[in-house]
Length: 98
Image (tube, rainbow, N blue to C red; front, top):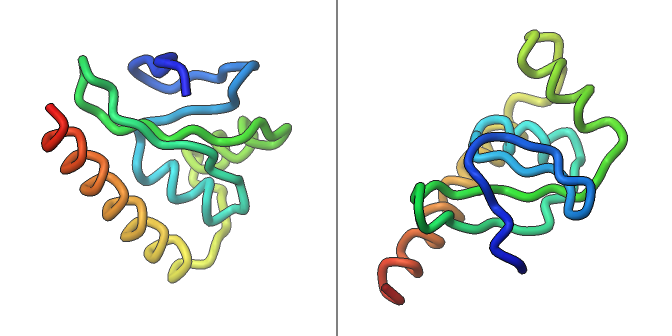
C-alpha cells in the first residue's frame, strides 16, 4: 500500500475512506463497511483505518456524529475491542522494526 495516509479524516476517491477515529471505524465495521487496510502513520504515530469505497459511508458518518445511527451494541463493543487489539499489534510491530 502506498504511503498516502494523512492526518485527519478524508475521502480518497482512489482508495476509499480513511479515519484515525477508532470508534468511528468500529461503527463502520459494525454497519457492514469493509475495512481494506490499517496502517500507522510514521510522523503522527496514529493508526489509520482504510475502508472500501462505499456510496453510503458519508451518510453513515453523518448519522454517527448526529447520534442517529442504530447498530447492535454488543457488535459495536466487540468491534472496538478487535480494532484496539489491531492497533496494539500495529504499534508493537512498528516499534520492533524501528
